[in-house]
Length: 366
Image 1 (cartoon, helix red, strand yellow):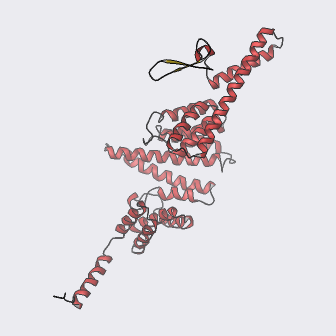
Image 2 (tube, rainbow, N blue to C red):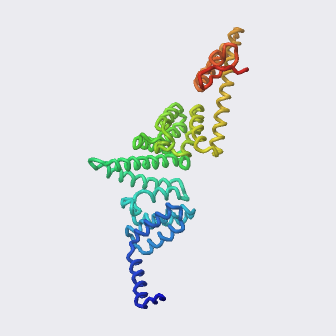
Image 3 (cartoon, rainbow, N blue to C red):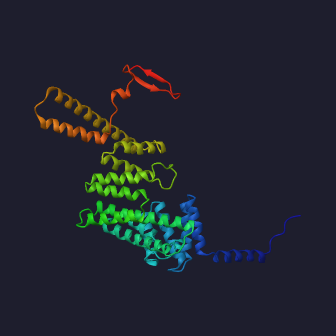
């Protein structure tokens, strides 16, 4: 028996029902759907859904704010930075101090994005970073006002403190670069990094930024202390631990370590990075440079020791030369560390001694 044709009334009813269902969908649901598509790596679908959410939202509403903020993020993802900037500026017009809920596009994120998207840089970036920092500080204060926090809230506060510290560090770096010519640049850097270390003392990047400031001030001992404190926070943790800085941060750390003569520590950081990604040209370059510098220091130490031995044997009359050679040897030894003597490294007959995994010794002809 052939199927019966649906009646016109039924078809009309179905069409109207679909139209009613579509009109009743909350714009915030479109925003959520767009977020899902963006996370799934489908920015074009996310863009279409977010635009639909915006078109169905009332001006100044939560859904409009959420749609504008998400459209900014999507346009960053697809490389349309001018469009992203325009959407974030419209979001700022709705939420000028970042006091509205993060779930609806409020909070500090749009300010921080505008700071990084700024074409002017300098003071314009500082302005947006400072607005973001103020919004973060207000969010942290709300949690601090609570008598007791859940474990989830404690985790949220830690994340906010880290983001606040990173924002302060970002501003300090602008004063070390683009705005270094300003009269109060050094004082601003000092205040910002000090606040960052107080806000998030267990956050490695804050101490790393402090070290960078100390290097610019030529306070190298203080820089070394800050770098050691930064590394101590994560060096014994597995790579996946959230306390371990990201890959680019640790590359920057290796550079700072080499700037202050801590080549051995830099090599340790770089060896770990190679284990994570052995295709990084910069990491291989820094590792080679670090080993070269260490080798040059070893040569200098050997040469200086030879000079001192001859000085003593010949009872050389230029005492200032001997004093300077001693100073050089002391300085190099401090940088390089104690070098094992031949007796410690070699076997009794002068050949190198290697130890097998089973503990037995095996001589290798030198």
